[in-house]
Length: 103
Image: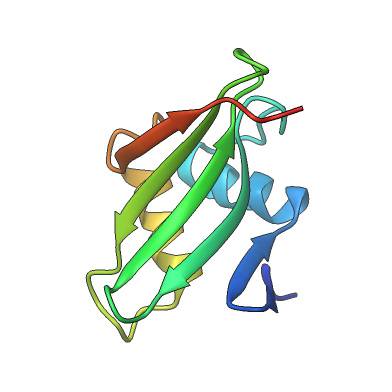
């Protein structure tokens, strides 16, 4: 089953797919509330992927993370899997900004 769905340039991951990616990295499925990557936007011109992560430990904080797509032939899901595998704490991604959602 494909982990991503495509809609208007965005690639979205469902909760089960994220759990599976993290399980590959650490060998067990975490509570999905702990880490939830909501959506990935791929910017082909700059070879970047933007990841929006909601953090349950700070429920009003959303981090906007940016990772380089170092190989244009590598599927985005594999890039994300490698980043999670390398560092579950997401230190491998550059934090581009932290914003609070508007209610």
